[in-house]
Image (cartoon, rainbow, N blue to C red; front, side):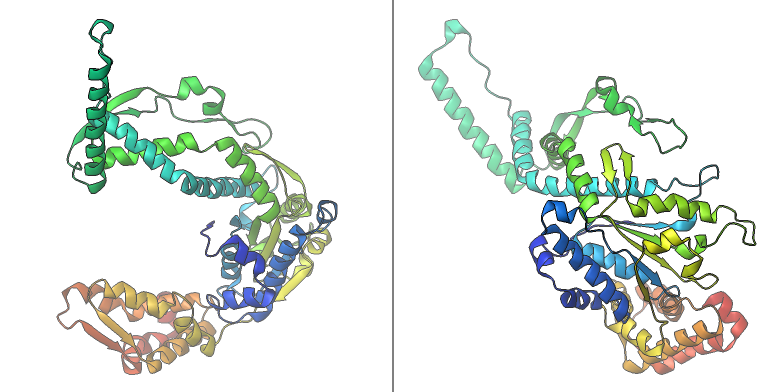
Length: 463
């Protein structure tokens, strides 16, 4: 699932050393130092490449990464936080969702198209921020025209230069007063009539070619006059009218053609694609089992990772310098089961460690937005002061580790189920509680969870 909220400026990103990148990742992901080092070097190499002469930069291929480790240990989170740190377009896809041609499933090129669409939204948001002040100013002028129609020119026979000038000055003073009242919110209850554009036809796409996603022609772009829609007058209060007019002005000020070009450039130079569950498609033709399309999926993914050109509605996109990070648990298969060509495209391999009790204690308390912090903040909205002591945190971690050992090891995700069960009663009763202070200690954790954890059959279903 893709996102792209920047946490730092491009200047500071360029200045980050691998050691600093690892330190940033430490704020969100506990442990997994080898994986953090690998992605930090990959990001730094991308920055280094951009400073090379163009002809040499073209030859430097990204060093794709293969992460190997059980579920819930931080593979996806490391890649996601890296993309946020680098302000890069980032998308996560699951390899098992793709199928070779002839089978029902998604076309592998759709991962690049999705990344471009995400980058378009990203660039568009940045451009909207740049034009927001201008758009608000334009919307304010249009709103003042609605509140105070412009002065109509006098008939030639009655035109008197002196009177006309006085009328204009009076109208200007009145407009300034209205502007002041508008900015102070004193006109918020006034109603104005605004021309609102309504869509007369739904937007749809022509589908053709051998793949559903191969041709993406938007009818709205082909026949703009047909799909512009009619306008109708709507009576809106001033704040709603201001918001609508501002959005309309923003759309006018942002050049979507340049946004598309910038998005394609950003994807080509800084895009990151995270391919999860790559172990699910590891297999060779002739191996046992009904799934004969596994090697076919690998061969379809191979050109994208090697470097090819994908046709999108914003232009042709080269994938040569997109960074690919693949991940899988590799319980039933091993990296050597991937076809040799695909193995060779992931030269950096890192193994992530399974999480133990000490890791869980740190995960519960150390990262920004740690689980304990989240629950304390959520219940604080009900006026409840929730506190965890060190003994409670340690006992929660021990229970999570014990259930992971006895049942399926789902890593840190087990903490979510444990915490939900632990705080089920408090969460339900919080709005009605008279005592707005709750202390969670080791005895409370023991009372709420011990019976379920000890009963292995029950813990399989509940925890």
